[in-house]
Image (spheres, rainbow, N blue to C red):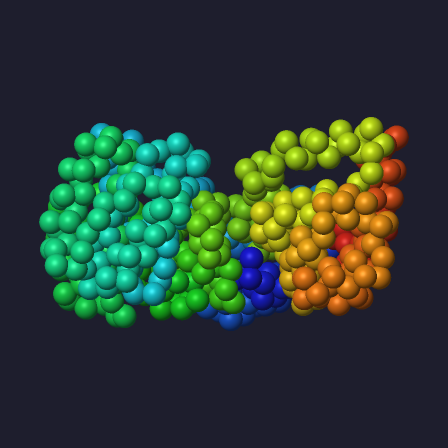
Length: 460
């Protein structure tokens, strides 16, 4: 997750120095805490949050538990992790939809924060993971484009949509939508509201009226993580006017410094409930403070990766490939294309590496090497082949190769590289036929770049 990269680098470096220490003294804790403090401030975490964080860690680190533990350095790391979790809210807080349907969710925030896309992402999330029937409505009468955008997105995610237009009053739109949601037996009605470029009295009054009419069970404040500390200040201002129930932090995949995620809970008292992690409508993740703390400290987030695999990998195709390999059949280019597509479904190579323990640096290396775009190019090249060529690449002669490279806008070198990689994977798959998995894992160890792979020492 790009947002935490520099913070993660800084923290894991400073903590690495202390994890090997046999004893913790005021002095070596002091040095580490100074670095942690600088890392948090550079990541744009609010000053009062940094101050209380450091005080808490210091107090606990110099307490009895650490001096008597078997590994004081590891214990210190654990304290930092637990404290990070506490700052962000300790547990994931779900939406509270246990009311007489339709449960109303009101989306609030400034213009450009990603409210409309977040409304559609939330609709998809509730339909797919909570099996709810969702209706979307826009009360943004100042931007016809926003109404149109929500209509398109509702169609994309398969949610019910209640039409509105700029001639109507926002409160009338909400009341009519509520009536329709009841008639259609919708479980949830998500209301997208108007944003402004800054906080003003008109906006606040309007959203207060909407809140009164809609009586939402959840009032979610959508903030752009890229604006850092300002995001937290805006949330505080809205919170004074509206009884917010939670926050959606968007554009987390951008190059933000991560401070907003660490400050929002403590400054506003409101939990972050979701993270927007990309453009697509499935790019919304529930916010788990423990998993994010683990990622920030370079310890990966295996639980989220497992959930991604469970949800996004086509199990039938995976089982078919396993059976094919076990029978000793050839691993062809169609199988390779399926594998590449599965990886793209999981957010690409970087997203996967990012969630594996100790692989944060590998994810950065992969990004710099442009691995994501290479995977896309490989898929395009395979798509330019005929079914016969995909099943049997040995028939690829000079003229066939020229046709494929012209059709995919690639070079002969790229095509040859793809064929070579396929051959290597094919050999690996053959090894799986017998004793299989153990051999393959050894083979994969050999493929990792020197010094870059595996779990780093001293992680738990």
